[in-house]
Length: 106
Figure 1 (cartoon, rainbow, N blue to C red):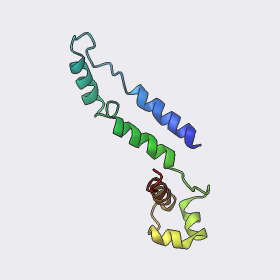
Figure 2: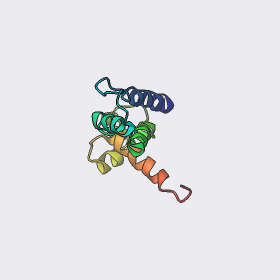
Figure 3: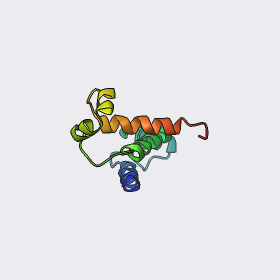
């Protein structure tokens, strides 16, 4: 599932790259790049933003058990309490992914 979501997000980001409102006939590549950046709010020209979007899609379901947040709260009340019953599965995914990424091996 995660790889499919990452591929889909990457494809969606790629579709943003060539807006029709940019005048590509200009001779200045910097001007074209600047217009692309402005039109896309920097999403397609900023590698860190691109990475953040793809990383978020990769980790969005870490430790997902396939049940709703309400059910997860009933099955794991200590987890629900930790996250104040708000987006329990999602917050858990972020915490687990952050813990893994914080390991010395990275």
